[in-house]
Length: 307
Ligand SMILES: Cc1cc2nc3c(=O)[nH]c(=O)nc-3n(C[C@H](O)[C@H](O)[C@H](O)COP(=O)(O)OP(=O)(O)OC[C@H]3O[C@@H](n4cnc5c(N)ncnc54)[C@H](O)[C@@H]3O)c2cc1C
Image 1 (cartoon, rainbow, N blue to C red):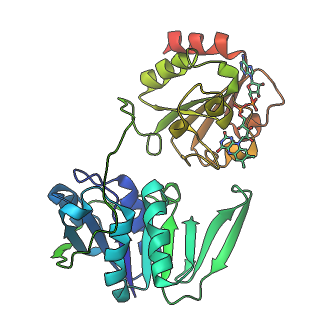
Image 2 (image 1 turned 30 degrees about the vertical axis):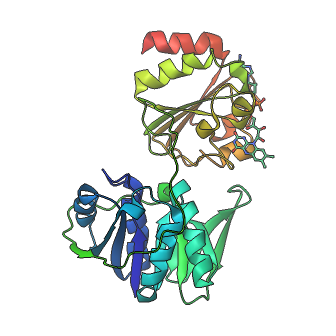
């Protein structure tokens, strides 16, 4: 059995999620190859070669892959998928962009957000915003799966995989025009070990500065509930939850967030959850390890002073 893991990277370094998806591949069992598609990405390839348990790192290095366009990557993957029973990618924006195209081109059903491997054809995945875990069996001859990386521990970096250059290039299906990125000094929300999130109770974007200070003191990222995003306090790439990012940091601090099921779907697997809310009945306290019943405008400044 052979497993292909699509690496996520920015041509400079490999995203940690890839090491977690390789761990999912190990749980399935079989020879694991990692596919690095990019341009001038030798550093990424060297990092991928160190992933424990990886046989080959397949490298498609071409200007047409520089911007990681899903249309071009999926065409390439179609050409090599015949060698593999499993095709895996992280359930990140990148993986969710590429893999459904691969599944469609292969005419198989995708298994999304896999969190546990039962056997090589049976997997556990959350449904209904994580309220229910479904065990699903795929009868397709190829299993195309996005993997929720927060459910797997990254493999060690003591491997020594072979580098294999792919020579086939694809006729570009899409052309890159421009990318506009939010620049931030803070760690990325999806991989930060500390996340400080704010809800509707913050009231406006100026008050969110309180949480930014708290996040900076703790070396963390800032997140938000959908209510805070919809009210325009913060941009929507900070949204945590069912329709936002799924995070599982070591420490999640929810400030003025009620704890709606759709929010919990994005953060309930955090190692330690702290909630600050003035309503003792707020559902967030049911998942919190530490709950502080307080007005956030008293509690957060005090916390900042103590830190
Ligand atoms: C299909 C669908 C998808 C959704 N996806 C998401 C999602 O991805 N993420 C998400 O977050 N939501 C999502 N939602 C919305 C979700 O249902 C909630 O409406 C939302 O999470 C509420 O945000 P909130 O907790 O900030 O606001 P509220 O529910 O209004 O809670 C505010 C909380 O702040 C407390 N509070 C008020 N003032 C203070 C104060 N001064 N000090 C301390 N505490 C205070 C209140 O007691 C209350 O508990 C989705 C909804 C639907 C229907």
